[in-house]
Image (tube, rainbow, N blue to C red; front, side):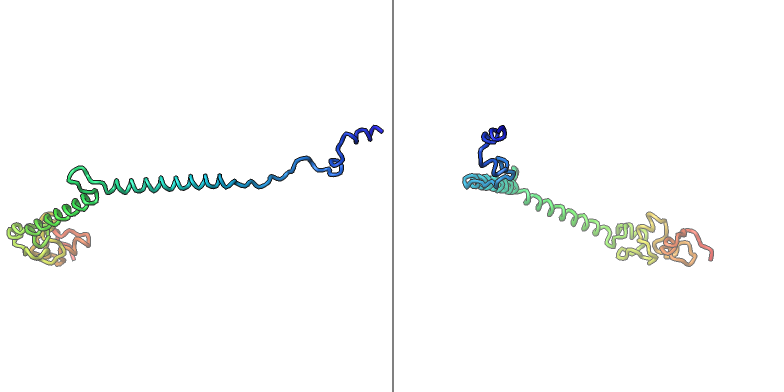
Length: 167
């Protein structure tokens, strides 16, 4: 009897169904169309701001410099052209003084009796200017020490072109 009383307090469908009163799975949440539109609006605003910043940056790059009203790119082009001209002028000035680029001016070439149009008058492998200013060899004699080996060859062999080598 006691058992019957206890059963009377429980609803019929709960006893028959013996399932819990809640569902263990979470139903899929659908975003309402109004929320989708809000996300789309936010995305459009972000893209718009990025495009605006890109345009501002581009305009800033194209902005006129305070002096002369030239853009930064125009100033860089002018500076590059000026540097190239200066380099060419310096090269021409050197060429006017040293036609064969052997580190001797044409005046020095005349002083040492070397050929102003040949960078290595004696064809020993050294520039005339290097023979005089660095190695102290004779730019008009291919074998300064007279041992039968050209000065440039001696230097490559590691011997002194100013000291006769024994053969």
